[in-house]
Length: 203
Image (cartoon, rainbow, N blue to C red; front, side, top):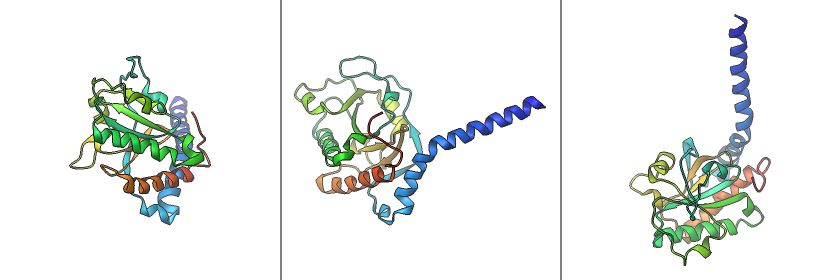
């Protein structure tokens, strides 16, 4: 009987610890979606239930192992595309860079990430533009188990937001352009503002 009590007590302690760890993120979402009336004008779609970064094999562009879990600890703005990176992919990479840069002093709280979903080589001409990005190759099936597009769209059509705990929590509309990207920027600004009390730049 004492063992059973200790087991129950241990489970409650683990649950309490998990709640304490998750509380800052939960509070930022409440601040973003509930407390602030402006949050109702968000263009990004909140993902429920959230999905954690997978423990999937990945490599960098030089073929060296890349740990996807190392992306935790920072807000992420993620795109997905094959290595050939045609016009839509290049547009997403451009918007990711611009969205991050226009955040001003908060830009160091957001990383822009390109997840390459195949083995196609990335053109040398594109690499200089990726100097500020995190780029990793991840198997397409692993990405499909983590991220998903809106109905009628492809994974590569969207930009995705991942919180510092490694959970995919928001999806921006497909095929953003400069005008709709301005609305996405406001979403990011509100989200960063709501999490400012606990989230700091860097990992």
